[in-house]
Length: 277
Image (cartoon, rainbow, N blue to C red; front, side, top):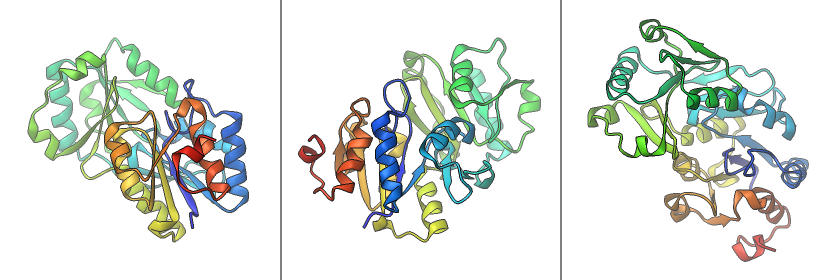
């Protein structure tokens, strides 16, 4: 029996305009009314999830959410950080020095802000600040590298720039690199992934793996699905994700998440043809 649905946000829960549709809100409300908990698990920080949590009625202290690709567990009522993984200063410096050397756009993220030493600030960084509702700080790199609260390094640039980006192999032994979007290469502390977030949620609410349904679309959702008893990939998702999924849900821009919940609440067989009804 599914007791908890842990879901990615962008291109999974939301439509093409990054909004929650009425059908999704209604289906989520019915699921919660039947005792099924919904947990958001995203690469976003808490401020970037807050509006979705409020719309879903999850902005209460009894609920939690997972940010920074599994690196931070939040309490939803206040945004309090319950658990977090930060970069070691030496690792942060080594990665930042290399990114500056290859001249790619990037910024750093803490639980409360986006920070950059690049000036002028490129539009990819400004856009990320807007999407995540995080204040943007500009400071000298030497000051930034003294910080101990950095959860993520976001490499944000033209898709063709990231396609041709070659970083030293040694860095991949010190941090986790995930291409979450054509214009995003996300870097988090080594061994941080969304599967850790699923495990933290399961421990907090005493859930068994078989009671968790995981939903996602991107490569950074692989571990989310692997840690879940029922694995659901969106039809618009990455091929690698769909290969391990138990179910392929309809596309995110066709109310795929809502249709998934509706099928679950009807006790339908997990068959795509029935999800397409």
